[in-house]
Image (cartoon, rainbow over all chains, first blue to last red; front, side, top):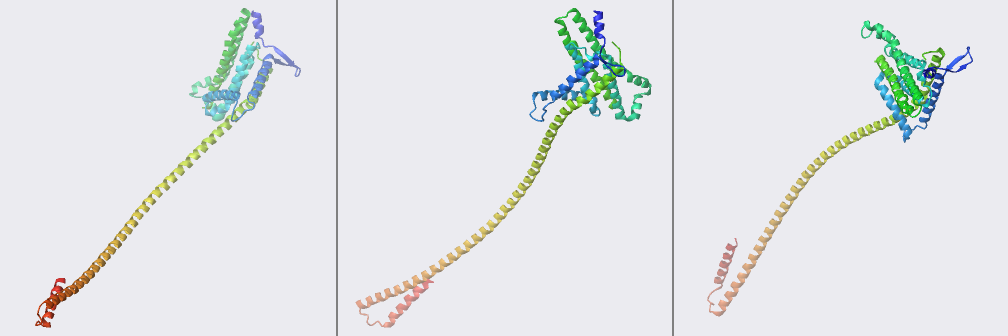
Length: 225
Length: 167
């Protein structure tokens, strides 16, 4: 059982691009491409034939979902952080779909620490960019000494701690859910995994997407206020 | 499990940037565009409604001013008409009074003339009666001795008596 789980947790190379001595493309990247394709094609299909008046039910549902997400993130980041809302919407949809992908028997890409690390780095770069844009370079540097210069080392450490916590929280949760699902599949291969998967893959997957983007939005709000 | 490959990181980063760019173009932009267009229509409708309301209020004020002015004017006209009517009434009453006074005066004159005429007729009738009576007396008695001077005297006296009664 241990060997099976260890094998499942290993990120394997899907194929190698035969240039520069062979560039390995992991299955995470391949699944991410699939997720991207699903998202882009889905987005294209749901936004087709949008009209201003006499809207279809599909359009109303899409607009309602977008408005809900937009208002949710705008409520957190505030007026000055409005321009970062599209990124947050993209990331929450991506993480949610990636986490839910486990339902189809595919290894979720968020199970790979490389992906969660990139997401966390992007988030923290965006937060620092927002801070520099809102306060200027001098204000950004001064912000490390706020509220008192005593906390400057902690604020500098936060530059690494925040993305690390974002990265590890998402990775740990998805990995944990994946391991539990594999254990259940090994013990009771029929019937039970379907119900547990509803919670671990769908509910927990969506919760983790929410937590990741919610924290990123909070960091942005702190940076632009 | 915790292996981090440089190429992996690079591919994922590029994927993420591409995904954000494409999603912004394919999903967020069309939805925002439709919402903004709808908002523009709503704003336009609200502006139009606000302008209409302002115009209606301005018209209402104008009409109120006009109605107030018309009411004032009509009150002036009624007062002037009353004044004119009073003047006309007084004039007509004056004319009627003077006309009535003229009629009364003329009637009085006519009555005086009729009275004078009646008196004259009465005098002549009395004279005739006296003559007749005298004739009868003279015919039935011997009064030849009575001369004509007595007769004339009688006539003069009876005539004087009648004149004094009439005045």
